[in-house]
Picture 1 (spheres, rainbow, N blue to C red):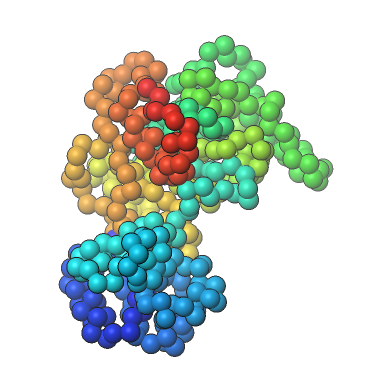
Picture 2: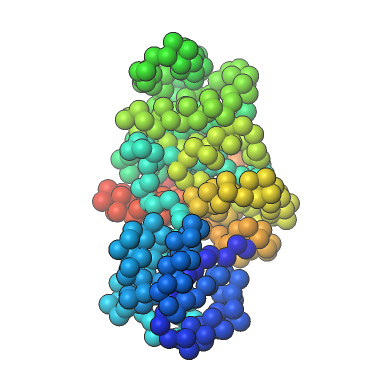
Amino acid sequence: MVPYKVVLAVREPEYLERLLHYAYASEYGTRMHIIGFTRAEPFLEYINGGELPDLAVGDKELLGSWLREGGMACSWRTFGASGDEATEVLKYQPLPELLEALLRACQKKGGRSGPTAKQGGGAVTIGFVSAAGGCGKTTAAVNMAKQLGGLGLSVFYLNVEAINSSAVFPRQNRKVEDAQGLPNLLYEMKAAQETKNGKSVPVDSFVVHHPAMKCDWFDPVHNRNEILQLGKEDVLALLGLLAQSSRYDIVIADTDSGMNARTDAVIDGCSHLIWMLLDDLIHMYKIDQQLAYMERSSPEELEQMMAKSRFIVNRYVGSLANALPESIREIDGVLPYIPSWKQIHNEELLLSSPIFQRDILKLCRELLGGELAEAAGVRAYG
């Protein structure tokens, strides 16, 4: 488990000593790494040294000069008594409650993408990824598309799997030529690039609407090579085109399990990542190995990826039987086990479980802000 880094600045050495002693002797010692200062000069020298912590918290007089110099690049709290958790932490309270408040502050603004983070003013991009197959990634992705579409948002579902598993959700009145939408768009994009045409390719004539999923998509292609030939730059360009088209509020990208060029593009190009996990020994081993490899090969890229990632356990039955990989601090949410799906023969049932829809909607609100769902006044689609 990678701990959050917290910088604490207080005037009283005794206060700092007691807090640090308790923190490192308790469960919080593995969840937060606290660095303490009692004077302004060393605090400023450290925090301006280049490596920002997940959270800076302390007395107003110690944090004041740093905040006036633009310290808002890092999440921060001052010690106060107003009860406003957005800017303050109550200084004198039981140590477990104080450390829990610091942990909540890290989790809320510890470097993760904000609820409405967008790509240069375009659509919010959400990527679904996993280390192993069979975890329900596509089912969760299409259910999220349905929920967000039901809230009145304009959603695009992009599947770049080698074998498009979303094809099990057929669209009524489908025409054979609809499957050429993605290949034709890719051709137009390459032609525009070769001719150095600065104009963006309009996507309207290449996409189709899926009424059951309440979103637009590309009809699954007939020729698998059309997908296999896509490189990282191709997928990044496609994501960028959809996000900047002014047509969509949300773009959901669904990838193969494991790593390949298309998955790399989704990890790099999306503003939010949903990692689907199973409470399964082999699955936990694979995600552990994948994250460990990324840490060895590119620690900086792993840090950037983790900052926008949420780890969701699917088919959750009430408790975890397997330990999480060390790189995952904690799970960010769960999706329920639906026994009736075990021997399912009707794909429409995968889009109509009230319990699953409820928890998908909860995840949507956490990603995009509860105000969107509440303002729409819409319950989960069942």
